[in-house]
Length: 189
Image 1 (cartoon, helix red, strand yellow):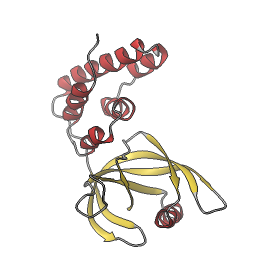
Image 2 (cartoon, helix red, strand yellow):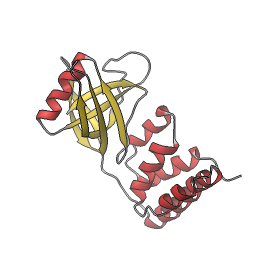
Image 3 (cartoon, helix red, strand yellow):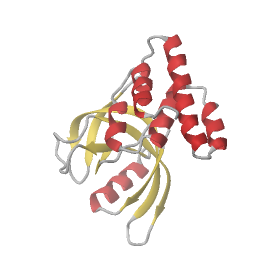
Image 4 (cartoon, rainbow, N blue to C red):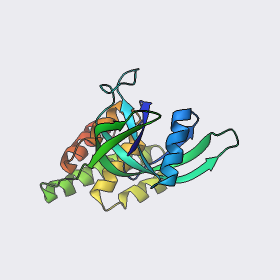
């Protein structure tokens, strides 16, 4: 899968990310993706320099949902997160990176605990929204029945720091994701 390497940027499954493509290597990558399956991943760079050692091994496979190309060769697009993945060996580095990938499958250990953790996460997220005057959005979040989608939605929309979101991509355990998010979200005042 092609990989766009960016500092401090990640995409959560079920999330949307607007991107502006201007670098020649990513123009070539976008051409490749649009001719093939419209998919690419984001490589999260730890630190300031791109190298094989600084690119995190976990990412999200993204689908190009919309793309507007401009006369100068640049493009605006919206990338939708599809699936957690683990980047494997680099099969290509130039003109853009391509990595072998494997899916990170979600594991569920104790369903009762997932229900309890999900309820706690909904309570915290809706509390933040209601205190901010966004009651309608709080009602929508309260209606999310799938705990995995709930966790990804909360991570994408309530955790502003990419460094704090990134560990979630490598967590196979849904219970671990929910616990981690509960640690990040403030309790009601």
